[in-house]
Image (cartoon, rainbow, N blue to C red; front, side, top):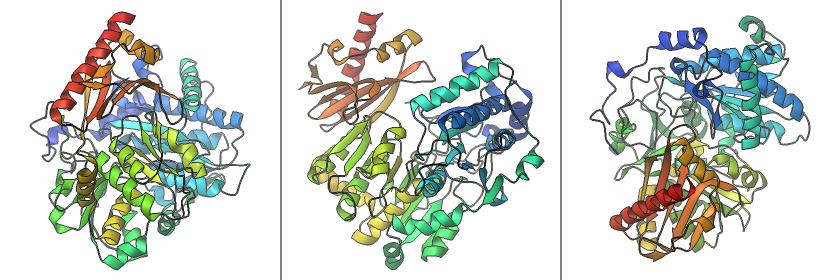
Length: 549
């Protein structure tokens, strides 16, 4: 991976977006429905794009919003629609467009009073809280965010009544209907003026902050954090949770300092990511350079991406923790400390998350539920309590309340932040120290992800793969133990291939938006072994391409 000379440095002026032009393009430029790159396309985290690319314009949001209205009606979802937005420049515009459609269609809609920002996990929490005692008239939600994507992007995602990310069948239905509406020049869209929409009796302005903050003590040991007197540093990275940290500190008496309370849609206060772009990636040491510089000032520090579904943990000695490392510590700690969880509650991980979690889980007598990439696969287990924890290598996770019931079914960066403080408060050691002890017990894991070019035809090969198509019986001088095209935890297609040996694994899956495929690999034997796994894994993929095309 090539590292930009700007990486880790303050963003120069010429990298900042022109907000007026971005917003003007949102309202005045229109997508071509015949161009695949300009159609509505729901990936694992909703529809994303930029107005400058004709991929996130008002036309898209009008069509998606009307499609969601129709989907809700067909599903019999008649409760309120909880709506949140992050701090990207296009989020406010998209929210207003969506509200004009939802109100015109007589939906009960719930907005943060004062038109403030609302994190993704707070919307999940609100949906689940409303639906807890209801079997009919259930709520669902919309979050307007492109997550950690650059400032020029916008995003729009739908959470059904289970509170989690919508599954593939749901998003496909909404996507296809939205594109039909685009093709029909928005004739089916019902819309009313903004002022009329917000003054309609079915539009409600509520406080999302207090109910969520007050409930935190039921998922994290806030009393222990207070009692330990831990000095906590928080960099909101200009995200949707910026107004949550002061109430959290006041409610629970925490010694917590917000090092940068600024919100600016250009994100001019960020340090530049590895590729020379501004990206609010709280798992990147380049994007988190500002907070890492302050690590010695605090006992523990953390940051989050703009919609707060991801976390980044910073310790005084080790700096920013690798996501896989922190997830391993979280599993090690939670499954020993949460006595209210089911004795057979499992550890949830995706097929590309570190096998260190498997080793930790085995030592604790817990089974692992391995699922395809996408947090939606954790939703059923988090709902019924059979999954204590679900985590992704991209720094997204959630876990159950202390009593073993559901907290959120979407990723929650806030509770993962606070858990790091709890670990330090209860054990006297920060998560980085604990991970060093885990490595000493289970071995050092070497993990890498890279990308390789692939044509549309080559990417299509991944969809028809079967384990029998892989002829190799060895990988990096070890016998292959498993060849997987379906996840072991739920039998769902992983959209690619995973090959497992005793001390390593490689997984490959195509990108949904680019002409590349992604390669993930891990070794417990060293960097040389990891490189051999990566090389031979890609050789296997190339052989499959040659045989199938």
